[in-house]
Image (cartoon, rainbow, N blue to C red; front, side):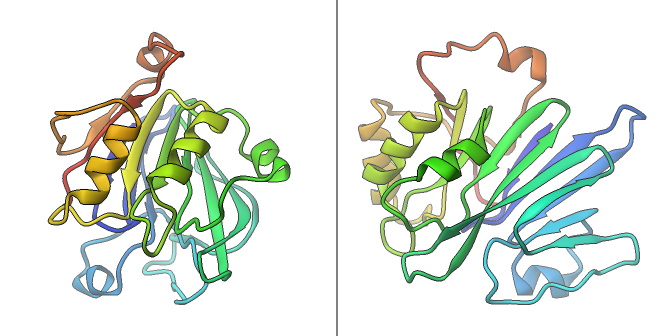
Length: 207
């Protein structure tokens, strides 16, 4: 599995099926990137209902609602939550290659409730917003990480040119001097070998 960050809450999760088919899952693609033709995902996920996303090709599957879906060996679950403005936000679980990724979207609640936690379940990789302006900040993010107990955490929804939010988050997590990666590549067997007492923090460069 490979994970790439395109800024804000926009990510691409690239997975490979058992038949060696490459599958692209893209979350919160931007209108400008859609028009440019940059994105051609097999599965498109939208965490908020503010913009309708239409399939770009006949074979493209678009999800912008709660529920469970299975497309091309990728399991997707949409879980209801709220933004800071108390609007609909969808937490997505994306499960491929036996790796379970949780993308919190524009999450704006103080904490996860018990129903959300039960639906989220086991998480290998948590993508969590941290900016504290349009989403939760580092304090809430730290609390949610402790509740979910993922093996890997990828912070998102911050401006790389304004490093204050990221610096505050890393300090709260007891980390510093993490070198950003172009993309994050991982196999299930390597996740299993990680220290489960403390999540690994991965910083991605914005594409």
